[in-house]
Figure 1: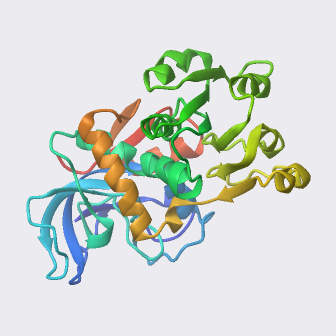
Figure 2: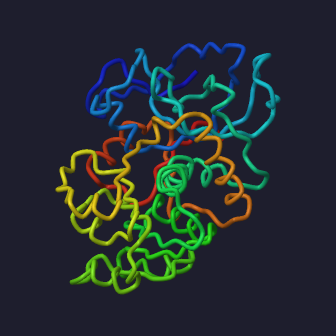
Length: 325
């Protein structure tokens, strides 16, 4: 089968495109003919070694896929040949990746694709939408009636967070660029703050004078001094990006008001958490409420170029690799 793979950790130059043996699947696995695979920042961390996780060479890169079931093991109940499916948790913790013509996916990491959903849209949102769901509900414990501040609301993770929070009955303060305001408001945000404003914190505080209950910075800036000050009593900060940031944490205001900081990485989510997120994502995809803002589709053979552009910060939107038509 054709695959984008590596035989050592390193720069995008270590990525090869060529033939590998088809994957071996066990009784609990589903063999999937892959149609498209997304490219994420975390994929570049695994490829470079910045994120240490077991890697067996040759290692197929990538974690997200949309495809069709080719065969299902006897213990992989609920899947039949021909089913359209998606997955967002390959390429980590010893699992081979998704940038190939086929993958053997554990059945508890595979989900049915709703009828009528575009595969490019689905794979582009598989990682960011799941990240948003975990940030808001698993770690942020967001409830109806609470106020959430979403920084980076114009991106795929931030936009998904806005949609999900509004649907959950929360009041959303979205921080994004001024040119993104119409888009973010179309997602349902109640207040929009231009991140280039002279007093972003003051504008958030004016919109939420009692403080925000959940603060999610999808841009990875992680200004914890400001974020802690914006929280309501028992408010929660969720940290999900900014691998190399080293913010100052104001301990006094944090514990005196029962505030907290929760860090998480989607790669550590268990299968029950991922399945819960997948149910919500599939419903939003089927209803048309959740769509990626911008995608660019490249052939599988350009996987190295896709990683190079991500490393250089030259990607606006989401890169998707087309494996087969």
